[in-house]
Image (cartoon, rainbow, N blue to C red; front, side, top):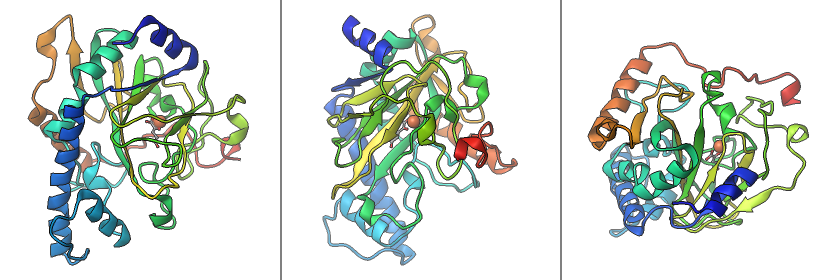
Length: 316
Ligand SMILES: O=C(O)CCC(=O)C(=O)O
Ligand SMILES: [Fe+2]
C-alpha cells in the first residue's frame, strides 16, 4: 500500500522509491530458484566443455563469473521473456514458481492498485537484469540487460497501440542497487509527452532531447523497488563495482488496455471485479510463453521498436 504522500510524490516526480516491495521470503525463493537454474545450466555448459570445473560448493556467483569469463551466451536462459529478435523453438527462457509468486505478490499488487486501480494485468514486457562488473563484460556488448542502460522512456519501448495505456513499471532490486553498482537514475518531474528516441544499438534518447533538470540516482536496498510512469526518462548508471547488480523490471497495466507487445502473453494478476479471472498457476503462465515461442519461431521478425529509426535527426 502507498500513503497519500507517496501517491502525490509519484504524481509529481514521475517515480517513487519503495523499500520492502517484496518480502524476504519472496526474494529468497527467487534467489534459490535462480541458483537451481544455474546448477542445471552449468552442468550443461560443462558437458559441452564451455566452462571450467569448479570446486564443490561453488555458488551462483562463482558459476556466473566462470560463464562471463568463458564469454558464453549466459544471459538469455535467465530472462523472463523472449528476446527482441532471433526467436527459435529452442530459445531458452525462465518461467518458474518463485518468479511467478514475485510478479503476483500481494505487496506489489497492493502498491500498483494505488496507482492504476484494481483491474491489473501483468504486462509481458519484463526482464531480469544481471549486470556484471563492467570491466568483466565482453567488449562490444550493448544489451541493456547486461551493460548500462541508455536514457529512455518505457512508453517508447511499447508499440504505438499502447500509447494511451495506463501502465507502471516496477523495477525490483534483488541485490542492493547502489550508485556504484549501477542503480537506476531518473529525470524527475512531469514529462508530458513522448521524447524522440533513436533505435541504434539500444533504444535511447540523445542528450539534446533530454529534459534539462538534473538526473537523480535511485539507489534502493534488496527487496525494494522503483516505480515509475511510462513517460519518466530513466537510465542506469554503470556498474563500476566488483559485484553483480541483479534486478527485475516488471510492468502492469489496466486490464483490457493494449500491452504494447501483444504478440507476447499477458495475464490478469488482480481483479477485484472478477477474482476468478486471476491467474494463480505458474505452470499455465509458463505454458503460454512456450506456446508463444513456438508460434513466433514460425513468423517473420516482429519489429518491437518499429516507430523509431536507427538514423536521422533523432540519432544525431
Ligand atoms: O535496470 C536497468 O538498467 C534499466 C531498467 C529499465 O529501463 C526499466 O526497468 O524500464
Ligand atoms: Fe526502462
